[in-house]
Image (cartoon, rainbow, N blue to C red; front, side):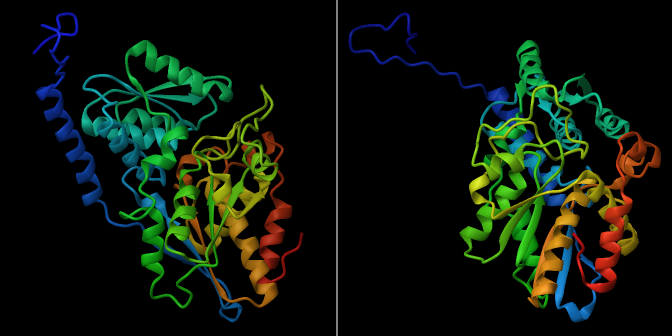
Length: 378
């Protein structure tokens, strides 16, 4: 082999071989472990939300809380790790660093331990203690920032300082997932609906943190020529709705403004993985309405869930109300994103709600009246 500095004559070919058999053996084993995790995991359930039979409208929640790490983000983390491993970005002993509000970090910490690399989660200091405990349970480290707007820069800088890889879920979520099929969440939903009375949903309601889930649903329904429409529910203190409404890909929340109170969704900037052009509809959901929807979920299914589930459920029930008012039969699907036990000191705490100035009672009343009469007030 000739080195670039010693070409060996006028007709020589520059030839540098950086093959690393030890690294390729490690990589082969790491990819096998991540794929084996998928093979060990059963599909998640599609729960039926009880509605009056005479409405002829069915509502389902895709229960992503049953993944090994307890949230929708398990699918994303698996895809991100496979994407980064096969791109040559993750190396033995070098840390993986992620900017996260918690759930993605829990799932990525799980996969980092699975393949044997260190993991550091860069998160707002307001992240729930239970999420922090779960990240550390998987052998990872939490790195906190006071300003949620700075998680991106700090994560990138930390990866640079440690010689690690910044996973950057907000850029890579939509491209790491195979949206055409391969057991993604959209394919799973349609497979599970195939024997229901309305197998092609009129609407799928997602919430957006990276935007990867809504992008997967939107691309999948277009690719397979379904008529299903995609709605994204956005919480307070997030710029996604404004950027989508104004067709502004550079929309930002004001610097110094508070981050989203609904952990896991809502962002201060339009993320690269959020695809506004693929979305049919958006709703800006008050945070108190998200919490009220959690009360309704617990009464209907006996399950506690995280705040993002409440945001999506509020929007899904509003769509159901429209279908009932129009006399339109069909089905609606939304997500149960993660378990509520992670948020007992937040969305299930009267003390926290009072401190945040959230009055849930008016929204509880809207949902109670709707489920008993079919009328949506407001």
